[in-house]
Image 1 (cartoon, rainbow, N blue to C red):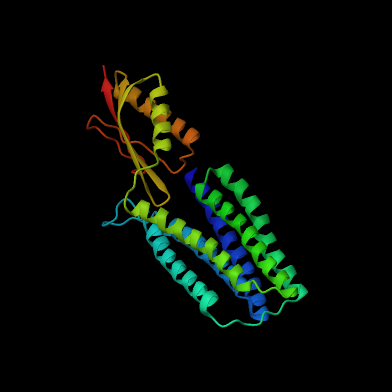
Image 2: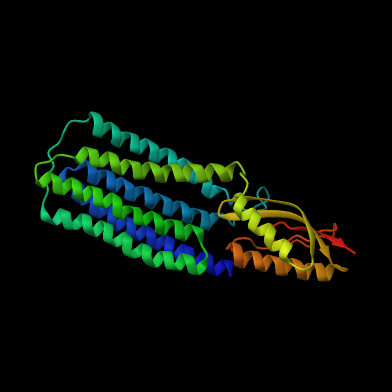
Length: 300
């Protein structure tokens, strides 16, 4: 199941790259022809999303690679790349701001085809995101859902660019101010990449709401006596959970059945499709995968 979903993410990841290339080239043409800094900033916004899509694919390609030195895979490489990209995004945003505030005022040329081009550059991501969002919900993929929602911000940023070009036709020059507004969208994307990447690299805990929901699921099982401890963190796109639970069972086989039942409930209710398996305890652990840690104690 996980492999099928990751193939789906990879397919949409390539689609996202294709959309960003098309829109970036469209905005590049408009930027060169018009001399608009606002359009240039929007093109940068497209390239930022393009880079984020590449980061996602990098994570998919190499996260499962294992070696003697990294027996559990390279899940965090995706986040290292994301942090590095965020630094480049901040630098690019700074250059746009500097040009907008201190650069020489250039003449902006606006023609009808440019206005249609800007509308098209907003429509393409919007249509793509509607299908991507449905695919993300079907596969319970947070990365696809987040990507689709990010695309929808282009409707607002492209709207600002369109407003600047229309204003230019009426003799009102707001191009550089529109560029500064688009920079806000760029900075938000960069900040999201940096924040999420650093949280994973520093092994920040899963949010309290998720842990609370998982705890309720475990406690709701009739075989559960008590949840002693429950911790969790992210690693790349994966979530690691570790719990110490007392079960009302009499043999190891029954305990294993209970643990599988709880695992399935967590998958279905918390959308943690990237949580894969359990480690049985009593020091008789049978380990099939290290993506999910679950210790359980037998209670006679």
